[in-house]
Image 1 (cartoon, rainbow, N blue to C red):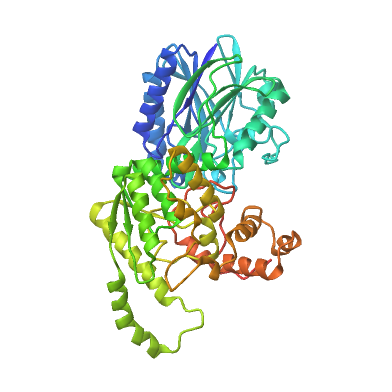
Image 2: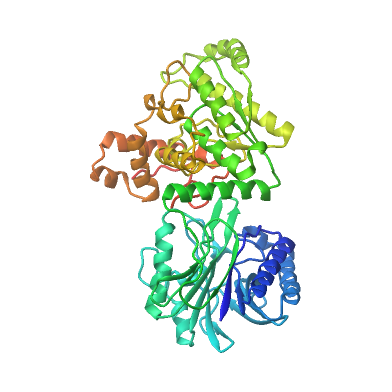
Length: 551
């Protein structure tokens, strides 16, 4: 039997557009001879629909789209399509998948395990399916067991297991399933690159059955879905694999030695592909075709420019250098060389005259209020805010999406300026630690086959260039050390005491932890950031701003 893994990129709320994506995918599957086409979780609504689910009209339109879809699919190919189902009157909604066959809805399956952790809050919107409902269907003499995303994350012992009370995969097997299917909207992060395939392989081995995993692809807000759909054999070996970060209808036999995609070979390669896809989808799904960003000559803005050029096309990206008296000539040179190498637009708007006006008018007024504190950054921040205002003016005039360029290390400790370098519509690399920014930038140059990002950008000491001879390490620990402490505190969730016990000096750990706590208010006001690590700043990390707990 031939089945099709339909890895598509829906847009949240675009019910007609998503329906047509489903139609095209199933028709392609039918033309390739597939008896069954499998589409991702909530393919009709997009994932995650969030509070759109509180609108009855949205749910009704999704149900009408499903009925219309049934009449548009080729009769010779059955299809599994994710949608939102109504529960019994007064009981809410279900995250569901419909079996469509010969123009009619033959069966509906409901998601049983509803993730409510990190970026997920499905229990807020959905009722869980029940274990007594059938979870299998028969097609051409083969019995298929259907689960939806999280339903499979409790099936076997693995580092990613969530430990629910039920095991929907085992229930499919008990009902006689001969092939397991898991349709998913499983967001990308670097930890899942190895963890998720290992978990799915363990499920197949445990039950001695083939497993078809079909995942969403594309970006929706801060989430990036990598696809990476696969058909896995009973021994856990991949029989067929779809690519990461690209749409594809992969048609394959239920047998070994099927098409296998070239998957990213490293974390840096995967992160670069994820950020390009996330930037492209965020811009396009929000109605933008062009972007603008500030080019400082540093590594962060260089990488963001490179990602934007690849995501949107270099002709649709404008880089703006905004030098002041503290800007070095080599930084302006590197910014110009970068723009030329990438083929993006480039402008220089000198802001020192504006900055001087602030000094002339505001300086005496501030002096009248009292002496400046020892570590006063008032006029450093004013420069950043002048740049933010300048970029927003260009964004307003041209209709470009403003991309911010702050990395995770800076944002974690508050080494960033509200309404300055934090102003914008998308924080492209806000989940990349500084040391990893360099790795991803090198990966970009490797793929480009040139020093598109200039050599000097990698070798010069990082600097905000907001005061004479400024270096980042005047204010921060060395990034290699800072990033390791931040990883333990934020991604691993360790206490300060645990980090100190791991061998880091107490003053360093306490200082970094204090900075992280103190700057929650800044992070709450930053634009959405694309998620690539297992714990990002955003909806998956919900710390209160006004709080006094210290570990």
